[in-house]
Length: 263
Ligand code: SAM
Image (cartoon, rainbow, N blue to C red; front, side, top):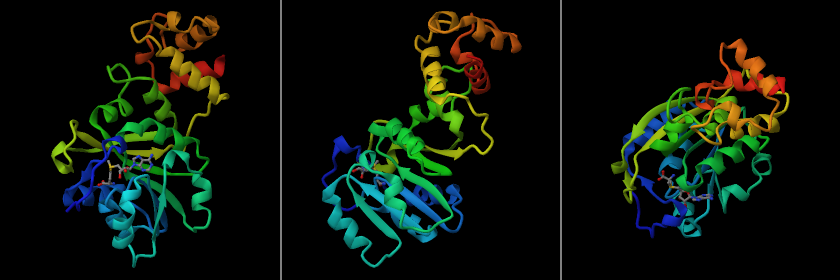
């Protein structure tokens, strides 16, 4: 049960209150032995409690200082859980984990939805070899992250994330499983770091190319990529029997990588 707490909307506080869902997150995460788990936003520690039983170490970042007494009391005799108080986005993850010994790092969390994309971007840019993320996100965001080309949810963030991860939807979670009840349903996603990545020659150019390609969703590549060498873009598109009238939403990751490497 969720204890008495003054819930703060500004921190995206909707605590999970469903044993089945908590257990399912842990089992479906398939956590190997010797794993260090990073949790963002332990809240009242419902998920932390399950994670500590399967992980070598859990590092949990919590911004709300009012949760300190509750969490410290709950985990006072547990030596494989460490809380870091403050804003996860401001932390140096590499520094925070350097004293621990482990084989894998997973991020497993029911994250605060208001900073979903910044959290994922921070993890990608952290320089830490995090092999898997199992995160609960707003259902619509999950649909965007895992969308297939040619569907309405396919967008620049989809291509960006697909460059780094194999993304799977594990299961849906109803809004009724939380206290307080949010206005949206949720979904648990697994983002597994790709082992075989076709590398782009210039990542910054790649990220810019994706953003620009999707800038105006209704426009085709000829219009969205005016500032680029369109002949070089076309050279690649031709290999796929396409031309500059195609829209970004109809192109998969491989085509974007090839375009980028041809520029
Ligand atoms: N894990 C808990 C659960 O499932 O019941 C709580 C999840 S709640 C959706 C999100 C948690 O993230 C809250 O405890 C909130 O205080 C915390 N939080 C919000 N912003 C944060 C930030 N920038 N850094 C660290 N924690 C944050």
